[in-house]
Amino acid sequence: MTVTLMQGILISIFAIIAGIDFWLEGFYIFRPMIVCTVTGIILGDVKMGIIAAGLTELAFAGLTPVGGTQPPNPVMAGIMTVVIAHATGKNPATAIGLALPFSILMQYIILFYYSLFSVFMKKLDAYAEQADTKRFARLALLPTWIVSLTYGVITFLCVYAAQAPMKALVSSMPVWLSHGFEIAGGILPAVGFGLLLKSMLKTEYIPYLLLGFTAACFIKFGNLMPVAVIGIALALIEYTRSKRQRQNEEQIKRLIEENAGGSGDDEDGI
Amino acid sequence: MTKMASDESKKTPQRGKLTKKDIAQLGIRSLFMQSAMNYERMQAGGWLLATLPALKKVYKDDKDGLSEAMTANLQFINTNNYAAPLLLGLQASLEEHGEKRNTIDSLRIALFGPLAGIGDAITWFTILPIVAGITASFAKEGSFLGPLVFFLVYVAMFFARIPIAQLGYATGTRAISKIRENSAIVSRAASILGCTVIGGLIATYVQITVLTKIHVTAGHSISLQTQFLDRIFPNILPLGYTFFLYWLLKKKNISPVMLILMTFVLAVILSWLGVL
Image 1: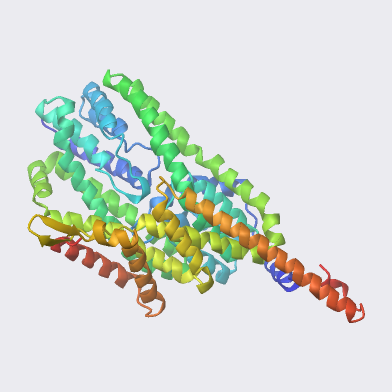
Image 2: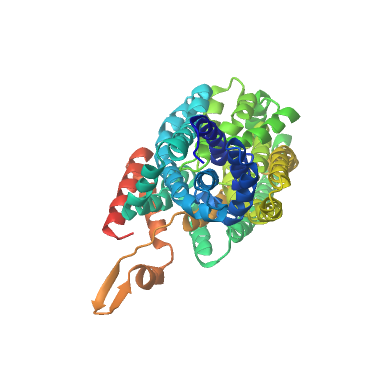
């Protein structure tokens, strides 16, 4: 069965909503479980949509956007699985595989956006410095609108207008270019940390930075908890030391004052 | 010490108070965390957008204070989206009570990483597999119960952000008197914690792996990454490159945008050459 223009438009509108939801990770309607079901409802093939939802959700269960990584796009995967199954009469399990190129296309677009949107930070910095809350809010939301528009256009092209050319686009993309995007994504946080160090790092704190770095290099653990615990230990050591030092200083001051004749003012004795 | 106390008492009365409703709003607005997601500073733009009404209320007419707070809140952050409201609530209580800028920033930087780890472990690796597994078994049979239950669970999860934000705020408020007592010392200790964690962040977030192999004899080659660089020190390139950028930012005053473009072009060229 073919997809009608009306259905194409409705699916694209849903893709915009689910796309925003995936961008923000708000209500999880971007998961294949919901995406396939809604696409099935729009195509008038509810039962197939729900079955595809179960299968695609399980196939994507391990692919999660954790720690700023970007998995193959679940929104496109869900939509295209149902659309392909509906259009070709293939069973949903086969359609999952055929939907993968479209899912990867959207994944690359978002990877590219992650790098591209770094450019907005300069202007955001300027608005923050001017305390211009209105302009800041508008610009901080702009990436979301760009992403949502992209979902609408790409989905419409994939679902209705140009399925074959979109697929060809994915397979013709040179590996070095897509690999280059991935590499850039891995290195760009260094700019953020450079900025962070510019505002935080004093010479006296460099040893702690090195300790944290070394700890993270050699403690193989899923998250930064061990490094944070080491940081807390170091902070507590410094805290206790400084506090004792302050007490000593106060004691010395008091002794000096007492020796000087005991005429010290009350306000100094904390 | 006496001088510092008077400085702070001078500053505190200007600060606006946050209500229970403001904190609930923080929980809802944590939805914006990824609105401006990018590789340079990850969720920084979204974080500030989420906390902006609270900052505006706290700083009121104090434009300089607001400017300083906005700039400080636009630094690198990347955490789990359900842990974000906890941090937003905690931070709001510290801003409200006029803690030292340094203390607030250091605590935020030190906490977002570990919270991300715990949050991801709970939401992505525990709740999602369980919910997806159960609902998918319904859905595969063609039962509408699958998607319905899935949807309801995640709507409930979204609204859980409100009590999470309130928990963070309450924790912050309780800690404040303790921080206030020794604010200079706490600020120093917090900086130490912050810098330790930044060191760890550099090692885990920045990824540079050299693919080049040097051919010694036919059939035998040395991998530059695993057999040379990793044997000197793991992650030596990420650390080196981060410090190189830090040096360019601090000493050469080069704008971050230039550094982003430079990094991007470098990555694509080196990928094309097969080096990275």
